Image (cartoon, rainbow, N blue to C red):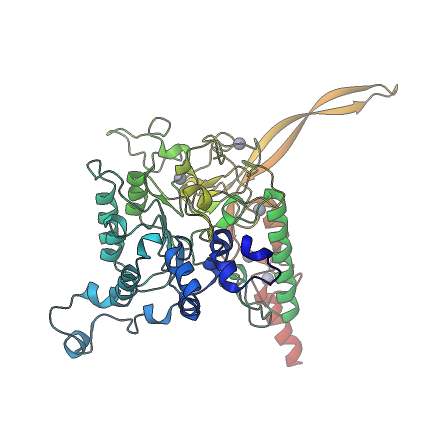
Length: 485
Ligand SMILES: [Zn+2]
Ligand SMILES: [Zn+2]
Ligand SMILES: [Zn+2]
Ligand SMILES: [Zn+2]
Ligand SMILES: [Zn+2]
């Protein structure tokens, strides 16, 4: 800090040669800005290329030269790009990972490649071979790699390479990569919001809204729902909130097996479902004489959890048979890598730790696969029932449950006593409307109405031409009848 005290304001070089400031600043600078800065003075050049911090976090997803201009297969419509552009020996891998390899080779030449601990290659052309090299080769030192929404990645090959990288006979110190972002969507790039064109992802699937007023109303509803979810789960992290389906595309069963094989060695931005049906000691395993695969508690093979249920647990017992994952107490394999990719740390802890709004202890994590939630999870309000509280069935339906409650009753003489009272609770979910999905009885009562003319049930929210009292068909015909006369 000596240079700061001579009365002159500190120069940029002074600031960036301060390790802490460089470590905090560099992740926000694109690689081109770092390069340009390094050219302005000897001191800055030294600070950027000699410090282990300048390239610790490297996001190449925005670098134009890393993008492969062709999207389709190499030989399109009889025109071979390979033959036309390059020599015969060029492989498909060379072609698609060429731009990235070029950048990585340049970084190696400048002796900064080994400083890269967090590498973001989202949306780029990334081949399985390149990932294999990042996993195993000595010249790389990447601990956290993000390859979300990448192109030209052969998933089967990548699965093979991952299995190979974690094999029991692997060399000590490998694989270098400890965390892999693969399943989730890319981190959103913060852009000025334009409310006229911005459509929230939840709304897009809800069909066309009838009017702009309804649309704005629904957007506000959704915004306040998000705020409420965040407040109740005390965190902005979607995995820890009742977010519902959190991985848009259901990963293949092979991926679940890869996650299982990599457990404790490589962590992912996804976790396996720990529902009791995946546990052979608890699940119903049909023997050869019975065909029990459709039994509501029959064994399920490993599956990636794709639904975030929030911290509250089952609607009835506020718990779950497998118990929630508690950060810092449960196995790190039970916690997904969180978005965004950490800017200022390259440890698994930095990538997995949920940040609470008030700095308190992280909320419990409850996530499951869709198979374990069939018939027991409301897709609208996200309440759910566990196996202990609701047996469920192979087809999704709601069940009436008799409950005995003790109610206080006043005798004629003014004294009170407790009387048992039978109440009926309806639990479970059913699909009454395609747009709503499977819903609980309270959500059904909110959206599904009975048409006063034809007595059919209709969804007031998803059937645009329906009215408050009539289904879309009756509403349309009665309007047309009015218009005709
Ligand atoms: Zn329960
Ligand atoms: Zn499951
Ligand atoms: Zn509901
Ligand atoms: Zn509906
Ligand atoms: Zn009707």
